[in-house]
Image 1 (tube, one colour):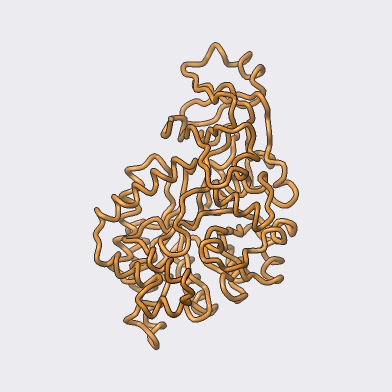
Image 2 (cartoon, rainbow, N blue to C red):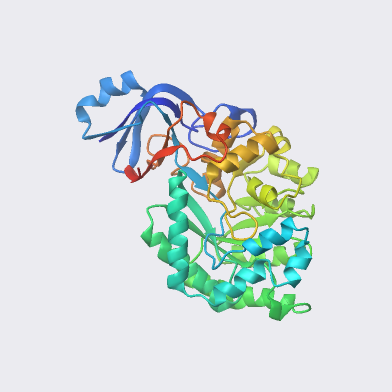
Length: 416
């Protein structure tokens, strides 16, 4: 048995019996002071006040890890990333600073299609090397589980190459990786402007069968937005994915209130993500569902949109709310989960407690992993972040800083 000892403050995210947390309860993330945790065979066995744990388990302990009187939380879960890509897009960053519009940047060869071209020119080994480095940085920020999407291939060969890369990297990292097929991320140049229906059929009839046959993805994601995949397009793709046994995630209501959230709820999507432009109907639909609203404040911040997803309305309506970096080369090139929490606090008026719940148990629910991780609950996987902080409020307070001192995955230290 392993003892995590000398915990000054323990945040468990376990105030709903290890299940996702809604509404006002998000402000109660489950705090125990002067605590200890017992781990055995990769799983949590017990947790509680230090004196109680030591009196019961001290004679059974084989190894001890000290938290040095710091903060301990569940390992963070990042449920929306685009961590497989080639090249970076800092020139587009500069163009935006200079006032160039999205369409101007796109016409100059920028945007998603820019990364898609670079991915097609790359190979699995190069992509895997890059992604492994990014994942190591995520671990250093306390992230122990993440979802990774394809979507920068936009051809059968390149999309499959991205998914194979995700599988290859998953074998090389201690993190749990959830693969998502995002062939419907953008309409490729060779299908513009009039052949979108043909590309949708390519996804359904050629890409999806191979993805399923080779077990390359757990979810299908679709960029549901005006001028890209409209509601009717998205519904066609959802039905194709469901018919093959894949779960659904949606990029929804990011730019226009199209009703993507309502569509996601209708089809029991695991999550709908972005939601900067979500309507009141969308909020109401989410409040009555188990579909998770995954918010990506880093994207609004980096693109200087001047508006953010309505976190307060979503939380106050009892919708399930998660947070993510949206790590990608164009609109959110950060792996710093603590910074995302800081932005969520300052710009979306989420409390630090809500942020931790949103980045642990609720994010685990957004990728269908809340039954085995996301909270410090007996019989769940022993994933932890140990922080050089007196309390959880200090994490978003020290914005831009990384206060993680140790990371534990399945009971083993993976960052020290």
